[in-house]
Figure (cartoon, rainbow over the protein chains, first blue to last red):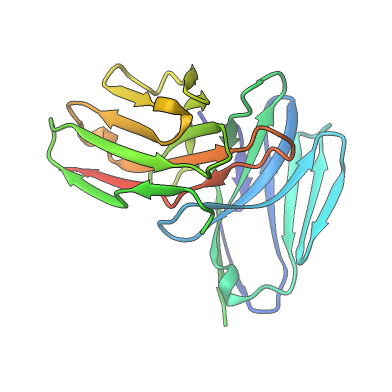
Length: 113
Length: 114
């Protein structure tokens, strides 16, 4: 079963605009990760934020984590057409030694030139 | 290219046939995972190997499914007596076993059961 939900399910923006996606999860986590998936392909890791961190940056990506609300957000600034993909949050639950990823339902992002 | 290879990329089979998929992880990674992704959904965990030992299996992995990782290198996932509900993307990921806890995914095998 999916750990959480992402919002919105789909997002359509113009190049240069910012894109914000939200992820909610259900149980206590060790860390939360964001992945990108181009149509019909594998997943590419974008960024990891640990449960004791509140914000993290990587290039044009900014991730926040609010463990009290069990939610995270991914901000992509100055979007490009190449950012068109599905974005998934994935959590690693507390006390699971083998670190399985529990994915959300994903946000489909379309960036138009 | 993450360095994780999966073969074949696509497989079309008839209901009732057996299929086998292969995953070659990044060579120094001793942890290996299989996930299944159906259309419009996020991937769901199937099974986990540490070296050659299969340490965790999801309830999704019915007894028609079997996975192996001989010698702790490549892994195979076999589905016997395929059903239409098995149609999905099967993804393999590997991890080094040390922080950061990043899994590297292959491009997946898309299975279509007719």
